[in-house]
Length: 274
Ligand code: MG
Ligand code: MG
Image 1 (cartoon, helix red, strand yellow):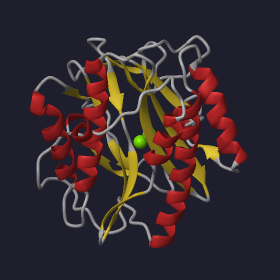
Image 2 (tube, protein in one colour; image 1 turned 90 degrees about the vertical axis):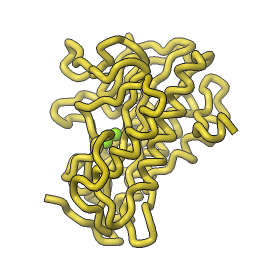
Image 3 (tube, protein in one colour; image 1 turned 90 degrees about the horizontal axis):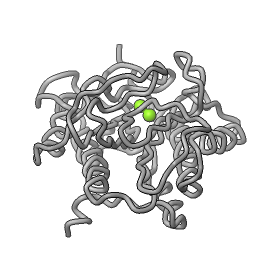
């Protein structure tokens, strides 16, 4: 069942999302080749706990860390470790969740480190842009299928990218994952109707190659079967009368990145081609 949120509850979810983005911004300010997944995980966990909050992912289904850190061909759910050392040219997807005041927040960002192949940068831009297109479709009276349709239309217009099917966005609130599921593909006019107070995480996961994924021997890391790079951007949003309200804040993350020479800014595709 779908739990619609009151304005007060949405503000609490926003606070959790802003702390998530504070943690992602901190990651964006320090991430560089030579650092490990464990390093950024530790930094994010400290920041979250210093704010009196709890990392949502740690212990969730047995997941051992605060962040999911997924490098290059890893799509999502990568386990940060000391042996996972970032290299120049990597793209590092960092997903973070926070539980505070009874509500979760959830957001993710893919950081391109150093000299990244232009085709891989484009993958990041297209994935990030598809997220904002999808958010624009999340209006009262639309349907969940309209969101997935929008992502798919945008991402597949060049026919070369693969949208991951096995993993989807989701409702969230008192639980990290609530109904409804929010796929990144779909048909217009299908699925649950979006009503005021619906809070969902929209999170396109796009492969440079084919859509097929596998799970690694660690039981968590999902990677592209053809081992080509994959990008992931996620916002938590509330459906409101006046339009979608983005509760997470990537501007905060991008501002922090702008002072870090080891990471490249991911502009939207329109800005890149303008
Ligand atoms: Mg997430
Ligand atoms: Mg999520």
